Image (cartoon, rainbow, N blue to C red; front, side, top):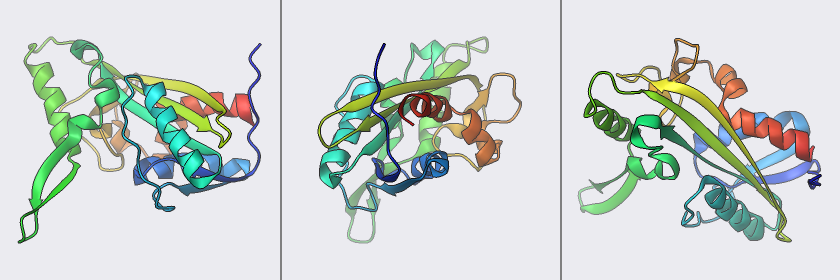
Length: 214
């Protein structure tokens, strides 16, 4: 039987600069006496995500923050996996939203994420397969806890759904406006944040973490 290291109340670094993700994780942690602070708030750099799996990337981020802050860190690597696209975008979910644009009168080059562009790319690839294409998909979230001494724990959760078009709702982030959970009419972006958080892939992974580490 696997023995998990227990997580004590106190400060914990959320190894993310994504404010939507930080808000969700902070809400999940609040009942457990954890004092979350984000890597962004601490000015910690984001490591390059060179892993080929969700677990590898989550561990990269968690370990970098744990060492940088000398504190236990929690990282999430999550993504959208579309059946008809062979599981893509998968670990490259955020990369599909990356774009370059010119910023300011000086022509300075800036980088950022355009999630509507990413959703349009997914929809375009589905449309190429015709009106009867399989629109099933799932979100997966992998949570990694890392301690400064090198110990780590990994937990995975998922939620099944279908992709809709056009995007609907304004309360989510990422691909939420096109993701409709199985058995439900609203998209993730049309759900009240508390309701979404209670049923999301991240919540599924977090329940496993709580059972093992609290």
